Image (cartoon, rainbow, N blue to C red):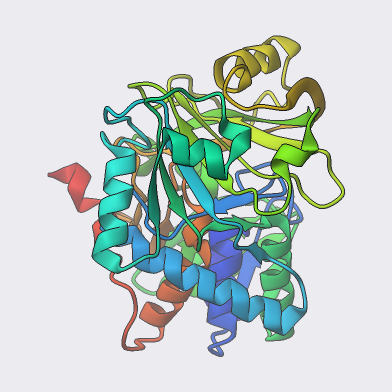
Length: 388
């Protein structure tokens, strides 16, 4: 069968794109080297933060807001709980600007965008943080907080699974546990050689995450860096500090991008909080990622980000995971036509902040493909910024 579109990679971006195309009646197939949702890429780990005022830049805000709307629609269609709007606290240990995802004043830019887009939020001083969120009582008197009640977390594995099932019910064809070996294209269309045979289509949308560079050649690969990240679930000694109303959080306590962590409240039935760090210095090969977290790394994470800052959190570990970020030089997305391959669209690298936008990006791509009016402008994510 010849398709209108083949979506390569069925993680956050691919599952959303496949679903949005299928619901518009597009003849679409999806291909993934594993059977998603899986834990081999960037779209796993039980929870992903979603924010509304996105400090990485104004171009992201409509995508984040649309994604939250779509997750509610998916919940209504599927009966699955996907989005928990528990609020988000961005907490800095200093009143000086602190960096995040390449933004020099991450908290300040977040607050400015909340004002610009009319997003509900509040600014807290150290006393206000301690009064409202006692689990963060280890931060000093210079601490400042930004609280956004409409933020929260999404369940990534569930969201991917729901979108793939709905897409398949709408006629999409899934080729899972199928390796893409090569992509060829010309003005007439696209040929995708897989471990199970050849697939053809008018167009291909490549959402392959950390494998994107290897699939699309040097002109793309040279812009991407795959960075291994660590997720750790620490058990609680004082679970009452993290009772109902506990938000997701981003903790900023230094001048560099790596002087931060992010985390989540306990999930129902778990007496543990997930905390993760971000690093962009050490790259890795996507096919040989070390998927174990050492005790030394766990101790270092706890000492740097938990001890003396988060109260009531033990050193005992419930579990740990590894995921990857695929980073661009400016920490922003790439969503654009491939510079040499006709009829091939590159979607992401997400640079570590993609899941919150994925549903909205899938919708925007499908609307652009079907020439629907009102699609979100994706030009901010073009490759032209690197050529200039």
